[in-house]
Image (cartoon, rainbow over the protein chains, first blue to last red):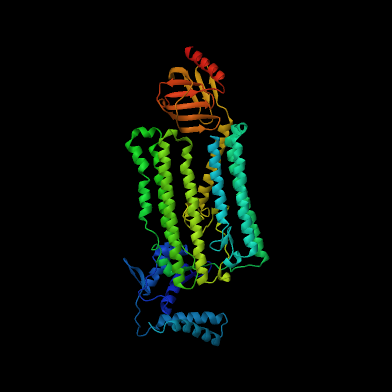
Length: 129
Length: 460
């Protein structure tokens, strides 16, 4: 999987790493138990301080996306379907996002169509965990 | 001596010409630091400019080499050090102007043909490539072995105390220090970032593995070249009579590094060519970037490394002048080089003065003044020949030499000598460092007069 980091953008680099790894895991580009590069290696390749990558990995670990092992390093965690994954956090985050883009002028139809195409791009590549 | 200087100059010209020549080759979507896609690099105008640049590099090298023959003219020999520095400066400046003018040519060709690339500032990293780093390199055992072997001259120096007169332990440790630099270079190249060339992880992995192997082999070969240079140099240093052969290790190292650079470039080019068949070039996808090489120096503020591999990776290190400390180091080195040049010019042009005064005998030479009192001198004599030895700290040009030397039978001495005058006044001193001061004047007659003056001064 190819990470594309925009160094001139507003999104912090650790966030970009975290988002793209989650996207990779969701779409199946990163397989379960697939090992990630070491913090130093990835930091060297992106050209950032190792602390930035470490922060992204810590975040992913706290969110349950990866597991860290002293011997094997960071690897993608095996996901188990939760009973009700669409919890209050999901609702809050989605509400905030949709509201933000409504204010920016996105119509309901356009937003629905666009969101569905993104859902398709994720679910289309990987049907289920 | 003039022949030696000419050989040294030829080596310098060869290195600068090769360096410019290799910079002019298209690699990593760059030619002379100007971003050009693979397809655009094949354009007839670009190819013509590249061929013309290579011819110009060759011409500058030949012309500089021809001018260096001026050193063989006896009338010029008095100014040989100055001429040598001047020729090197002119050569560097010519190469610099050449690179600058051909960079402008390439930029004009780009403008004329409306070749523009995206200005995105994305950094792409293939996680599979990043994870597999260091697994395709050749073993690091070799560079560590070369590092250990580089201590051989120090061990010999340590075991045999007689050698230390010609070859100090501190000097013998500079070899391992340079060798350690090649060890770090090997590790740095092993973990170097390679650009993502395809959406396919397999192609990216294949490219990165082969590039890593090429880089690690060239770093190991460079390490071996430095070791051979060091062993040869140390061996020749132990033999004071080796004379001009002392240049042999330098010639070897220059030739070896040039061959390794050429091999590495060729391999990288062939690798890119082989991948072009699998992955067609996507001109619109290459990012337009500012060259990270300015005035032949690495200038990248985003890279936090102070020392980075040279433009042709595997042949050594350079300083990142994009970092504040890098700037300090870079300009510090330039100031040191200019100070050295000024010293050489100053020392080469200024004659030393020997004054016999009431109480003192004074020798005035650039940075190596000495004042002698009568009671320091045991005896004075004139000899027609002095034994061979080595310079430990001083100046030795074509016309004269002065400073601290170590001579056979005499030990530590201070010399103030005009070369080509076979008459020497030897002052034996009570101290041991220096134990002797050996002087002469511009002619044998003047030396005789000086000898009598000194004798008279001592007897008063």
